[in-house]
Structure formats: C-alpha cells, structure tokens
Length: 278
Image (tube, rainbow, N blue to C red; front, top):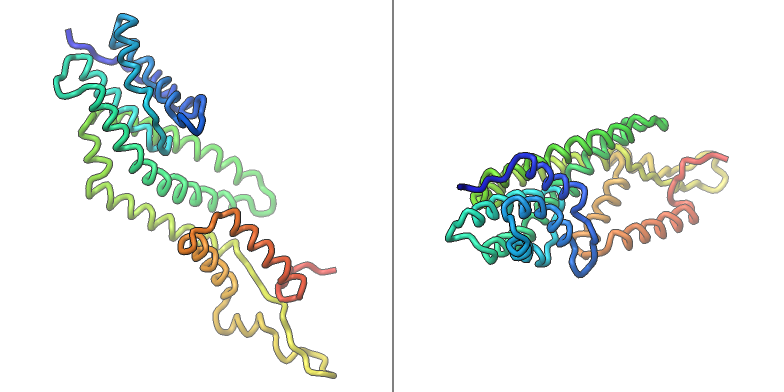
C-alpha cells in the first residue's frame, strides 16, 4: 500500500517550521533543530517503527541555514522526497535529500535576503512611516498586520508548492523565469527605497556669508544649492552611504557611527541646519 502524507501532518510540519525554524539556534547548528522539528511529524507518519524513524531522522541532523521565509520551500520539497523514499523510490535516498538541501540553502538565502529583507520590509516600512506621520499608531498597526499576513501566506504557499513539485521545484526556484521575476521585484524595491529616501531624508545646510557691515548675507548656500539641484545634500549622503556599504564593504554599524560623527561636527561648526529655533 502506497504511503501518503496526510494534510493534517503537512499542516503540523509547516507550523513547526513557521514557529520553530530558529529552535535551539546556535552558530554551530543554525536552523538544524528547527528543520528536525518540522520533519518529525512526517517521519512519524511515514515510518512505524522507532528504528526506521531514527534512521530517517539522521538525514536531517546535517547543518542547515537559509532565509527562513523563502526557505520553507525546502522543507516542503524534502517532505515530498521523504514520502517517495518511504515508498521505495530507487533514485531517492538520504544522500539525495541532503545534497538537495545543501545545494538549495545558499541560493535561497540570497533570494530571500534580497526579496524579503531588501525589498518587502523596506516597502512595508516606507508605507508604515508615511501612515505614522504626526505620531499616529496606524503605521505600526499596518506593518504588524500586513507583515504577518504576507509572510504567513507566502511561507505556506512555498511549503505546499515545494511538496507538490518535489524535485521539480528546483527549476521553479532557479530557472530563467524565476530569475526574471526576482530581478523585477528587486528593481521595484530599489525604486521604493529611493522614494523613501527622497521623502524622509532632508539634510540642509545653514552656511551663510555676510559682508562686513551688511544686514543680510550675500550668500545663503542652501538657497544656492536649491537653485541648482533641490535636496542635493540629501542625495549626496544617500549615494555616500551606498558607496561605503557596497563598494567599501563597510559594516552598517560603522556607517551609522560615521554619520553621527559627521552630523555632530557639522552642527558644531554651523554647517548643518538642525531646524531648531531657540
């Protein structure tokens, strides 16, 4: 009789990954134990004896680490492969499953970081910041609700799509069409981040030059810059940060500390306009 994973067990496996992908997280094991928790219901249903279950679980003791949201597809794929292995598929064994896991976790980490961390989160935060104008709590509520809805639906879709496609999911994940979709989403995220920077970053200079005995300054640098390129200082600082992060490989922490030093010195010597009146 062919063994088939029930929908109830698949749901339990998904919930285990959703809530526990960072279970017992450490530098040595990363998401290994979270993966074990996700596969445990499946192993228990497919194999009846303790010895069979123990042997099957050994497959998932190898190191594993990826972007957890997009990485849910790997759990779905291996659930499908484990089902095929339990039914005696000749071309699927523990080495095949581990090789697939090891081969996918790196590319999926890059995909997930660019799409989720680098694109989705900035888009949602940009919208939330706009809704939070004037101290409104709507922005925070919006982010919490929309983030959880999107991530829950997305992770569930990827998990069950991975289970449905099995080994064929590799083409779905790293094929030409998937690459084009990823690049389009990343481009959209870049545009949104640029819009957020243009809306929320406002760097002004208070530098002026006044002739001796004159009542008014003959040079107001901010007005001059606005006549040439409005908000040029803001654009310069955004490009400067991009250069440090991407071209100089500087840590974001160091970039923020450098900006604090520049801002402190700039305000101290009177170059930057704080906008404060006393």
